[in-house]
Length: 129
Length: 113
Image (cartoon, rainbow over all chains, first blue to last red):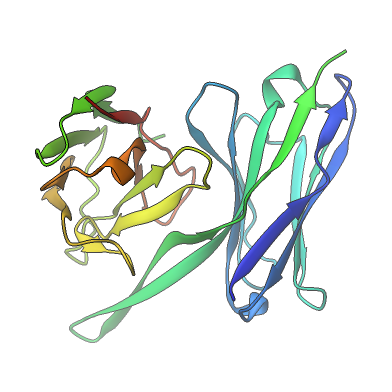
């Protein structure tokens, strides 16, 4: 079945680094864009980063820009996010999410709509001294 | 960045009764193609978030038909026609315009009375 399994979370000191991984299975990973979404303790959902199906077009939330780097290895069906210069406010659960897509046809033009249709169970990052 | 504002933030509901959550965006989510670029997600206790509604009003696969989305421009509503105990969770709206950042509303916590 379609599955996303995150790993790599843990306890790290402020200023430290982590690399989170997300192993995908049950679908053609190389055909889908992917995202990272996080939830700080007691807070709501926050989109963190996106990467297109072919590794192009990387996008980041302002809160992580310059510190987070999203990447993917389509040969290994794996999504990554390298997190540097960790801050206490980066603590939380990090979800790997698949970008589902639907296509709409209007007149002669095709439009694409992306939504988050498959979520992993998440991996927890705790930034604390 | 687009700001998404939900109300109420807390929603106690009696089972079998309807529920309604409002979501407003700081700019119109009506695309030039005529579609509304808005999603609804629910985060149930102990589970991962899941997609409920996309394109403003289309139910995701497997979502019961007691859930419906409506609205246009910058004002949207998620309705549950008859709340069930399994609907407990936090509901989020999120704009889906293609250029990030994607922003969620603050979340509405639905609980059973």
